[in-house]
Length: 202
Image 1: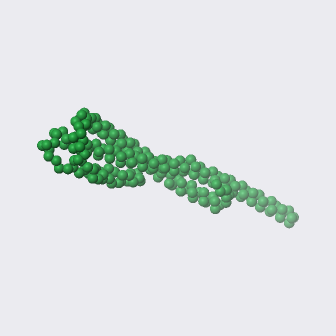
Image 2: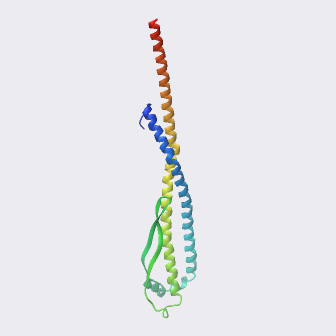
């Protein structure tokens, strides 16, 4: 750290810096609060997605015996293909995050009369599961981005509150004491010089 200059110019520099820190701090504190709220919402969405996936998976598990059939697996693999995972983005508390829109599937045309009655429903359930998995990935990414921004904002708030503002206040105090002492000393020297002049004149 550079040595503090005990001058009026440095006093103005420190005062200006203090004003700037005090002006930006409320904005950072507000952003921190918003991020905390959004992070809680994001965590709730991640947990809701996991619960929904688990519930749907448990329903699917009740048909596990049917899906264990090689013909059923082959049917699903042949008739279901992911063509695209559609995502967009939005701004949450100043952070650009991805948003899950949908998974686009391509399903082959098949004869519903020849296929087992439960395979059509099975295809739909598998589509729902894949959609939940992809949505979950995006929600986890949202949470990670919001969490990283919250940590960075908290660090900036702490820097201003606990380091920069107290540092400026202490520097201003030191400079004011030094300048006050220098002014007092100048007045004393002036009085001594005046008295000496008066004594010499007498």
